[in-house]
Image 1: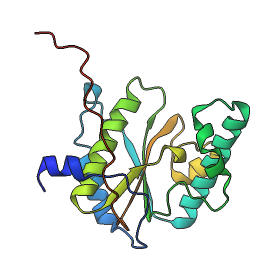
Image 2 (image 1 turned 90 degrees about the horizontal axis):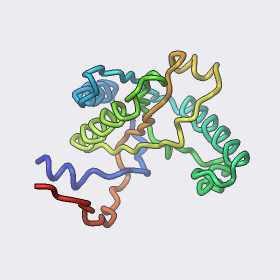
Image 3 (image 1 turned 90 degrees about the vertical axis):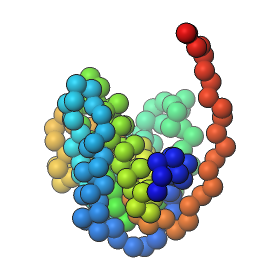
Image 4 (image 1 turned 45 degrees about the vertical axis):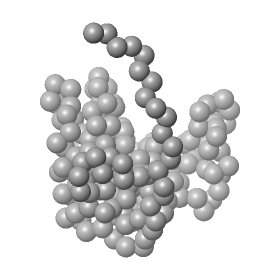
Length: 188
């Protein structure tokens, strides 16, 4: 696939076939994601692979509980628009995908969010190049339960920066309309 085609065709997928992604494929995609640039070449990202439906449901339920608590504490929070969806007991924030890859990193590292976002972008393109779908599901990042964090192997002082679902798309949605770039200035 040509790079420009990859840029145009990559979509956020929210409907997956009930088909596992081979662990070797997941690891290859992760390996390619580490080719992303990072500030100071620190390469601070770490990865947790979850391809167990029960564990993904536990993470989904934990995140839903914590986000709903935030919404109740502050009804004006940005996440309030997701309230009805999060209150639905059967809603799985991971869209019942067969695989979840969490890109994690040290919470206090200065550029951790940017560095992990770059790795996540590479991850999504690497997945798309193999005919796989992915979606960054930030609703799945709020894991506070210490037992669950320990079961996931999430180190102390680390945060889930990019929870990415991965799988074979049931369908690929049309590209949403994009606005023209807003160039604020050209200084020659």
